[in-house]
Length: 68
Image 1 (cartoon, one colour):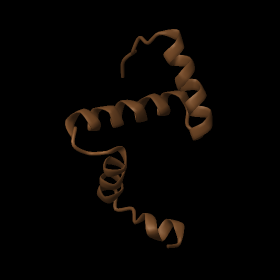
Image 2 (cartoon, rainbow, N blue to C red; image 1 turned 90 degrees about the vertical axis):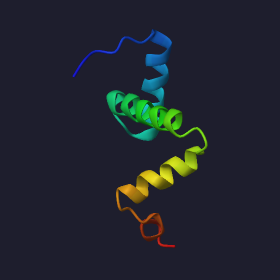
Image 3 (spheres, helix red, strand yellow; image 1 turned 30 degrees about the horizontal axis):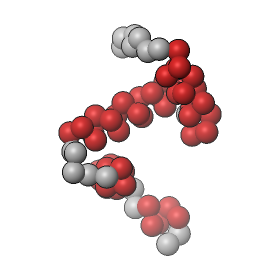
Image 4 (spheres, rainbow, N blue to C red; image 1 turned 60 degrees about the vertical axis):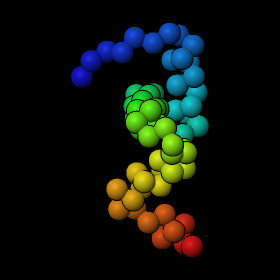
């Protein structure tokens, strides 16, 4: 594990987003990093496409979760 240096404004943005998303600050930063990496590796995919693929890889059927 290492330390990532970020500016104060980005840290504040992460803190605010983590509150809304009910994640720790570190978990929110990790989430944004992972999604960013996936987006760069898959430029033709939308955010929704990326999330759908991640749920599929995790064997999560969102329709069952939401009762659809």
